[in-house]
Length: 339
Ligand SMILES: NC(=O)c1ccc[n+]([C@@H]2O[C@H](COP(=O)([O-])OP(=O)(O)OC[C@H]3O[C@@H](n4cnc5c(N)ncnc54)[C@H](O)[C@@H]3O)[C@@H](O)[C@H]2O)c1
Ligand SMILES: [Zn+2]
Ligand SMILES: [Zn+2]
Image 1 (cartoon, protein in one colour):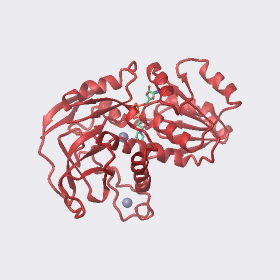
Image 2 (spheres, helix red, strand yellow):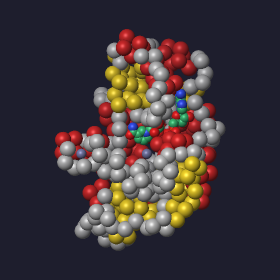
Image 3 (cartoon, helix red, strand yellow):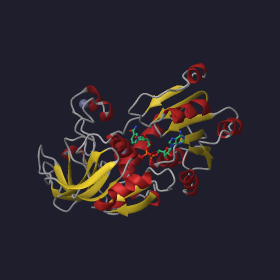
Image 4 (cartoon, protein in one colour):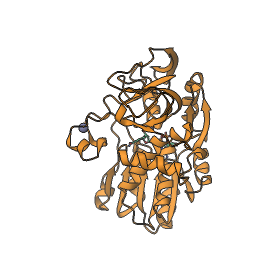
């Protein structure tokens, strides 16, 4: 089958690999939609691991139901890409995101299970979720990143009326803004380094205002506007300057939710959160329940995800789509691959 593989730094290539077969009872599916994620961009940047077929935000139709006796050929599905062991304490308590095995064999994030930038992919039977009839494939490919944002906002423990700052208006930041609004935030602002993305963030409705990360007036203006800082800052970039912005813009006693991932160590002004007794809350993935919540919210029309999709491309245009998403000048946020 046709797929797209990492071959070098910032280089993907359309290649041929074996079509996945049912191993360990996995559900094999024909890919109908797969999102390009900010985390894929980190892999793309590094060029490693060579040979990785990415694509962990997927939807498709069942080709072989494997161990899932309740599924039949042609059923419409999405799934959690993670691969928790099911036996450790976190797994048993409903927190597979803490399981040490979760990412080892994750779909599209490990060489063990090729992802959905391909004609076919496979997913562990217990991680596959059947789609409600009214959820389209493109919407279903948005469930995974939306669940990341729901988890981040849930960890912020909002009571309502908070002032919330989002750093980075990629899909994770924008969906975090959607959930912060649903949870009753009184004011949501975005700080973004890419002007085109910043302006567009406001057009979706949840974000009230956009501030330029590169403008030196941004920090003093926001401190003044919020009378001392935001109750909650959700960091959705994963680099030193962005985490520093978060530390400077949260109010004393406030909470920073760290969602952005840096694969290398970063430098931050540590004295700031220490002196202000800031809570630093990491956020990784989602619980199974949060993933299902997002599917239900989309199905019930409570969460509109299509408006965030900028383009739908075939495998041959994945390389150019990564270049577009990293140009720093394009407003595109989410590109969906349709093999
Ligand atoms: N914790 C998790 O479970 C999880 C899950 C998915 C993605 N992530 C991570 O979350 C981050 C966001 O993902 P995404 O898909 O939205 O990525 P993205 O690359 O599309 O968005 C990041 C945005 O941050 C902006 N930015 C960069 N530096 C900035 C700065 N200093 N100040 C303000 N804005 C800045 C960029 O212009 C970009 O628009 C990535 O690091 C990704 O790896 C984490
Ligand atoms: Zn992702
Ligand atoms: Zn486990």
